Length: 214
Image (cartoon, rainbow, N blue to C red):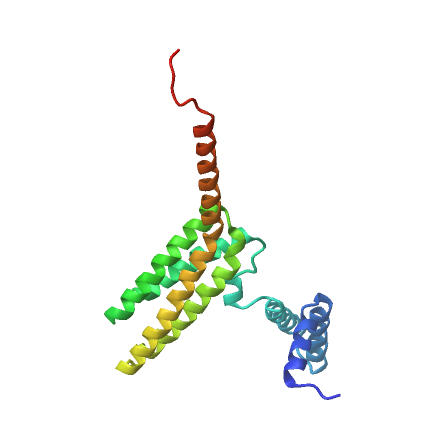
């Protein structure tokens, strides 16, 4: 079975992660240098340098890329919520770089909705909603990042701004729907409490004496 060059590279890195392999290669280098007539001290130095270099290379095996380090896999809904807070700040920073007034105002409306939603999640302790909300925020961030990249390269015609406005309006509508769904329980509970209050008031009016002398 033939393998790709990447397969052999990964295999070599995995082998180098083992100390016995690195030590064996260093010893082998020392023996080769001795066999070709190099002084013992020089062979020892080269083998030590080789061992150190192999160890540094092996230290990269299994390490996640920089982006993965910055965004570790969350272990709880609360960690997802904390990531939402970080994403909110990123969106604010990117929005501040928008020069088109209409686009800037649309993003301001979106970030305002984000603030309200995050506040409700924390207030009602609905941290289980953070995963879905983070997906929506990441989608917004990706769109905004691509838009800023295009603008930075000098492409911002009127027809593109119109399309960007429509996309932002769609995102804003999705945030609004998220807001309504998030508050659905609170609205239902409020209506139920209102019905209970009205029922109790009616019962109180029926059971209370209408008047009379003592």
